[in-house]
Length: 247
Image 1 (cartoon, one colour):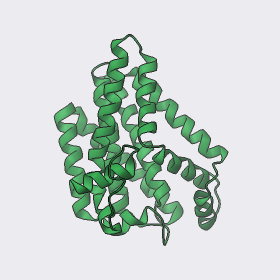
Image 2 (tube, rainbow, N blue to C red):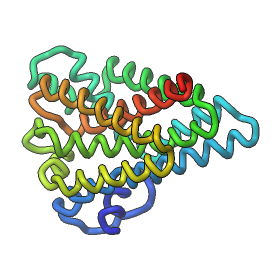
Image 3 (tube, helix red, strand yellow):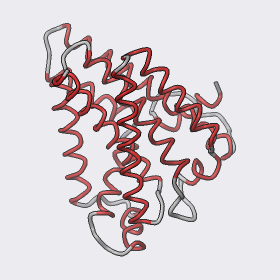
Image 4 (spheres, rainbow, N blue to C red):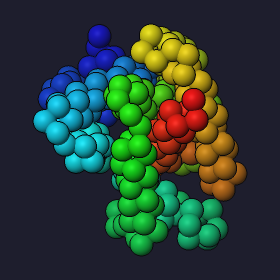
């Protein structure tokens, strides 16, 4: 439970684990609990969406559900998405891209990337019928956080130091195994068999993104972890909408 508390305190704004004194090793090894935190976030978003739909709101309910994920995480992963977009879309040399990503200011490419991903999430959530909508709202944060665990443990870190290095240097196969088992169990129980298909597609998508960025930067960074999370979350929602429409 200590690992779950540390993971929740790191990934969300929920008042959990803020006052716990923990070594970097303990924080890094909380990585395996990231999908469980995703389950908590997804459950809150789905519950909020369900309540607003009950009183007759539709698009507003879907937008509120997506925005609740932004609020609950304090925009942590969105910051990484914007910084990554600014760096990669500058098409500079590796060191220059890393310097741009480290800059706290946000450029035009970062803002455009965030707006596009946000609009895609809201639009495709709106297209998913109930109760599949609720399933996807829960599964997307779970699968995206499991995918982030894979990106952290499966690819080298691009910087000598950084917040993301805490996880990259202290997490390993046991954390990946815990994350994978958690994600598989949740998807199978909640949305079988489509949940497992979405899990496989989500992992495949995050693998492609991680490989592309790794080729460009020589590794991944904390910002890239956030970008992988948000992009995979959007991809799972989009694929969920397509599955509902086609089958």
